[in-house]
Image 1 (tube, rainbow, N blue to C red):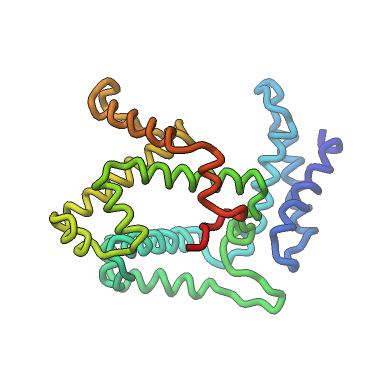
Image 2: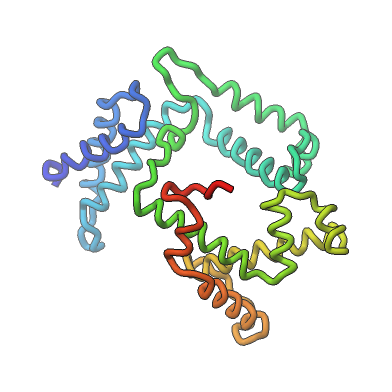
Length: 269
């Protein structure tokens, strides 16, 4: 079983090496892959109904990532905390309309400012510059996302088209808030003054619009992610269904793809 699947290791290693820096050792990856293949053969249970090829592929890919993870000088906890800080900072920037201060960021994370500095120092200490061109980061960072193929690009463009249709199908006030805040990048107080409401009301309308947009897109593109209302036969459910129908009626694949260029970029103004 191992002999017949030896080419699988070579295939997976070649696939991964195509997205890695040139200095990463092919021999080390092949060795890790071979060991994973042997271990997969020992633990394989044919009664589960899973083909050995699929079972071994998962084990080998995991072993290759573990091998790359061993090149990372930072612990997984350090990387995890750094990602949490980055995510929170992005959320605060979107909410405040500016880069948050260290004090604001620490408060949002529920930690002291000194601890925030410690996290940053830990990440900086993990950055290693190598004469061989070693790229600092996690194993996942060493394997960047592949360039989108034709099918991925079409799906990406269709999703953008659906987003435009979903925005245009929003109730007037919600559409005004979304357009002014996200597209025109206007401050909340300006939008509040124009609509004659408070800033907190604008924040509520923005949150309501984002939930509606998310559910509208999920209804057409990812139905499994759709969160339905508590009462499937209530007025809220009927309003949502009407909104979903308006999105569908606003265009087709051709019109949605026309929102972007052939490379998935917005058209020049």
